[in-house]
Length: 371
Ligand code: SF4
Ligand code: SF4
Image (cartoon, rainbow, N blue to C red; front, side):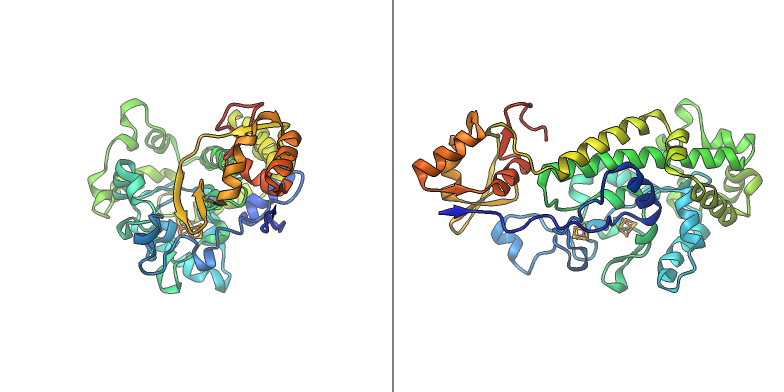
């Protein structure tokens, strides 16, 4: 018997938004493999009617998919959205203009999620994410099959999150590290833009409050009702009050001029740490090496499916499950040879690599759970 893996990652150009792709291309040694299992055009997280009850799998609400979430948008990305006059982007741009006019969470630092989202999501993200239509993103185009209106300029959280990873935990670690890097940069550059464009001292005091005054610890009742106080909004925008769209586009222009070394130099030092970690995680993502010695990880059997068992999202035939104990810390090559000799099973390297990616097997050289 020969057990192999049919699906290998397809190397394509990165699907990051163009601004971020230009930066990250300078950081990484090659293109990022596309996460082909996260099939957004035909969402991988929706069930056929009745499937959920049978399998016990979690599915998303078809009216939200993974967009029961409102991302923070840094000022320069808002500016890119407003400046984009491509006809194909018109609907997405309109959603940004609508938020700009409503004014809720609209500050020189960018666009914040509305208070109702922050409070509810902060309380129960596990049950609401992917499920609640009330928390659906304002840039979700429901009348276009749930397309993201701002995909071309989406923020780091939306650019790096995937519901499924071709390389399991190895892929998830790479994308999570890249998210840390990009979100650190987003926060740093948004602040840098405010500094460069100077809304004035009074506005800065409101934007960077001290201690308990933080807007995040208080819900503004006017913003909650969708009608922020005009006086407070003017104070927040200072010298730029009444010219908010112009401010955002000026931020986009400033950031557009930056090369990758400038981005790192202007960002919090944590960005340089995350850049290094992202490079290392990319090395893991692109590596097909097998650890020298393996042991069985700790996992839960999700469910039975015909002759297979679903473990950590992988469907494993029983014959393969029975061979796992051969990975007991002896050299990997010895374990493979013993499985072949005693069980008559040839385990291909790609399948063993996948078992490692999904943490069914773990390296003896690192703590279990690390990837
Ligand atoms: S990333 Fe979101 S839209 Fe894409 S397949 Fe996954 S749940 Fe569906
Ligand atoms: S910005 Fe786009 S991808 Fe992100 S939550 Fe909104 S609709 Fe979804």
